[in-house]
Length: 158
Length: 158
Image 1 (spheres, each protein chain N blue to C red):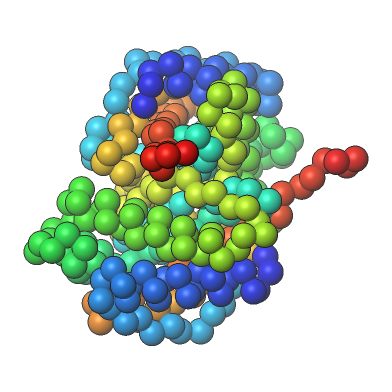
Image 2 (cartoon, each protein chain N blue to C red; image 1 turned 45 degrees about the horizontal axis):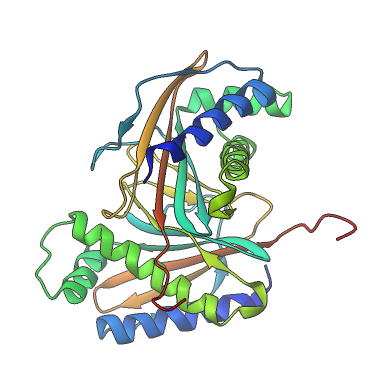
């Protein structure tokens, strides 16, 4: 995927965390996602389609998920329940949605988020796509943003 | 989601397995996905968007994934490697793609597939969506199809 496509997602994550969660995030070094690299225990996944197809993954520790949900819901989420998982899905949706608006030329639409749980789960991309991985530090712990986008093949003659 | 929306996905899975894998599948009882029900160790996940947003999950054992990939690639896939995971993503893509064509009124497009691995992973849907779960038996072992679709809210006045 083109490197410049990652910037709207990075900016969007910062804005969503700042405005929705009153939380400043600190970005680490951008790198290509390794073939096999386990995700944090909770990952929000959302699909993109349009003139490109893609996937956005927001992966975080249980603590980051609970604190984010507590702030969004103005409640004290002590455990990872359905409300916390919904909040992770909604955050993923907002990050993808804001970025989409800055990538007008791709005419993207976002799918329903799904939320993956499991200590050793890993979200993999098809091997013809090279996803970009961006680590962030938050006051609550680490999270990663992964974005993979591939152009849609246009049939010859159209 | 409307119950009739599941039928194109069920038919599509049967056709894809029959034509691509020369494999007859046997459908079990359709049910709503429980809030917490672990998936098989390999799940293909793909997003849908259009006049509805949704997610399709195809979850299977390592054996089903290896045998399916072996048939698709005309090779003997002894272990779960990148080729096997790509095959799971491609199967998920084909099942969603064929079903989409039968749900023209929803004007759906499909995203990039992602492939989730991990023994105890679980793919969850937002709690305002009730996914339908369809178990299948294959000669290689069990697999499940999960589909969640939600209408897109249209802004008032449009």
